[in-house]
Length: 383
Image (tube, rainbow, N blue to C red; front, side, top):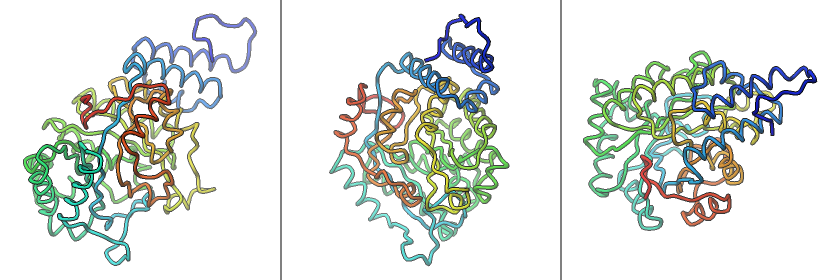
């Protein structure tokens, strides 16, 4: 490990100035002072092994100050209600057209059946509802509202975490209502919180290259801010490990941190590694890039150091695997995520780490990592 003291070796080494800068940044983070974007770029660009180890060590130290040795998890079920989508995001392997053999749009009875199964088999506290942007539903926006009503009527106490900013945008266009009116109507139907997905990368130039038909950065930000003002909590996300630059990531994280300063409406931050094998973007990248474990763990650590207004940072076991997820607990991560039961989006892109873990298995894994498992609800109240 690097020595974070002010003592330096009298012998000059060409890399020493970089180490001195890094020490200052890490001491700054440990002292509770906010890192700026220049600090963030330096951390993102750092490649020297011992320096990366110290970034991770510092993030672990900071996380223990904030969360001690607790690692939380949620017992939940994903509901992907349709894979039919009119958008053409290059990082996606989930999208199907209406005429695809495996295309689907679930009816309410099937969704209720899936939720009932989740409650009876593992006692879920939450469902996460999201799907493709199905062109057929533009003419039938009531599908979304009636879906939530059906779930709420059948499961009065269940937490409904539903619909990304992209879906809010589409509903706004389809109903001729503004974002606030759409969100308020969904809340009245039974929605409790929203996923902060569809963020991908908020640096506009790169965003246009990987998802040109999605809402732009200003629209995503406005929808998220509107939800927070209305008292609807959301998660925050980033998609990384594709064609983005360090500058893109810094720009994205700065937007997220500023939003959290303004609204305090994000419950957690989730960094989502790009799963490439079955995507057009992955096939176009030289060597069909697979993001390495070391880079993922380093990025997790940097999130802990930079996002000083986030208590909760979540790992992504379906994307990086259980083994790497357990290592992430020593890299600034304090949340394991959920049981999921199904996770079609990662699987469709070529994910190979499964889509369901039982609660008892999650508890045992967290204990094996030397941490204290804590079951939580969607908005991070400990159960």
